[in-house]
Image (cartoon, rainbow, N blue to C red; front, side, top):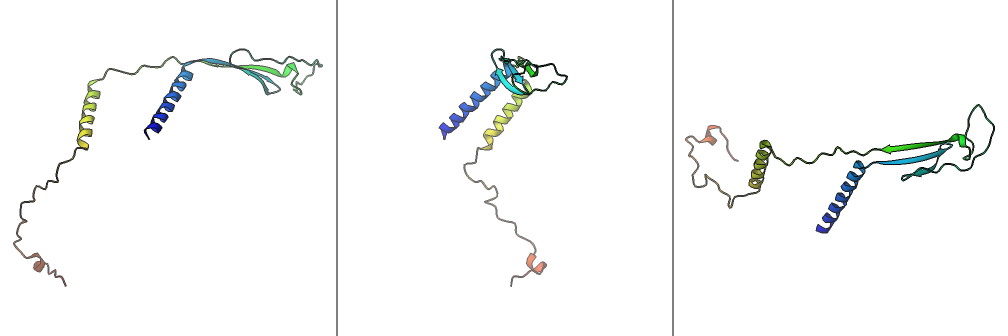
Length: 143
């Protein structure tokens, strides 16, 4: 059980480190489309454009029919900028924080501290004698 917990702790730690790495770094994705289809995508450089070009007559309406038509191609660049506004943790405790932590610690320790024996404070005393017979007064009889 301890190994499983340690394994999951390592996984969560790794995922949090990767999340911080991606949230603070910046990168660029260059994408090339032809006829509204993705032809090439590049993370490190420029995306490759169509090399073949079909010569065709000038038309008034541009309709993309083949991947080789140069007029239908488009490039898009997606830029993800890094976030460098991460704040460091506050290390100085204020008076209210120290007071809360002391109170919480003291009550938490005393919560699980039990008595050594069950103490009944009225165990040695006899019950008081009633001055009237209550059963006869209210006419309650066991049959």
